[in-house]
Image (tube, rainbow, N blue to C red; front, side):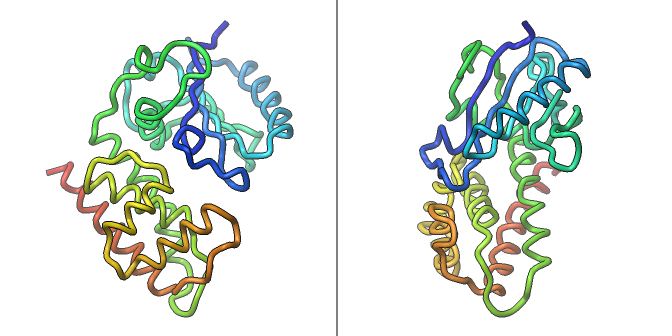
Length: 237
């Protein structure tokens, strides 16, 4: 009775789903907040449902009033999974929801309930930029902890996510990671072409890429992060 809609986004709706590695990204909208009993029951159901799926389910529940009175970061009712706790995250704020809403509005699909255009308001370019910039922070920290010299496996999520963020900064494109990588090969400095190509290979098929230069990876990461930080800082001027 509390369900308002179920919305699919991400690689499944952008034509680049990889059965080996892609998540199934779903946003659920509830009419009102969930109580603790509903969350626990839903969490138990999803833990069992996940066993029937070949790919990882990534699901967020947002109450209708938090779409109508949108703020960044956005309050959520429930997120699945959360391996470190009880199978799900029991409410909080999430910086990534702003980007998810943009993906849904631009290239998502309604699986159940109200049409997308009736339920989701536009997310401002400022909030979208802050959301995708936040998604890069985890990648930046992990890459910078890595080795400085020699060769390493290519972190395809980090490289391709940076490419799609740079595509948005340059041309306003709302792209998949695959599309971001393809854009990067055509538009970013040639120094990084091999790195991006290997990331695309790894994204298409696990363990298919060649090792990449660790120093070049850090150089690219710093290059991309600097451009993102300039764009975010410009929001505050």
